[in-house]
Image (cartoon, rainbow, N blue to C red):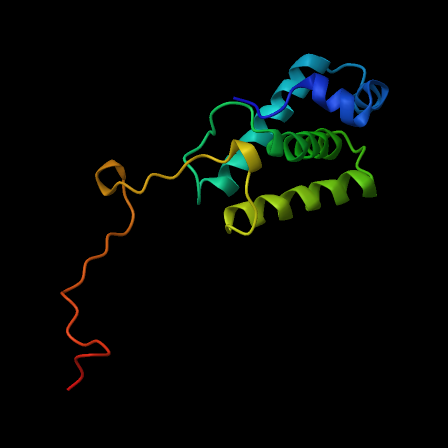
Length: 139
């Protein structure tokens, strides 16, 4: 599942830019579809540390990173890489790292985290003995 579409790439970067990015002998629909799939897989690699991927729905916060990574993948493959494309790619990766580290979130599309230990599929479990010392009970 891709986190962005060709229409979103064209909306952000411009339709003519996308056409100019690809060589004439390349099927644009196939190349852009592959680039979006690769971009979504790269996003999943970063976010899998924090979320179960692929994320359901179409998270709005992931559209821009998906578009920028896809454009970067298209440009690097066809030697059309510019400083702007590379800078937007790096910014997108930094944003994904911040989300993965818990320093940023997905806004309204943030997946809910269950606090019920019986629904957890893995991770850490904590237990402790009854409290021995308190402010009232010191040796």
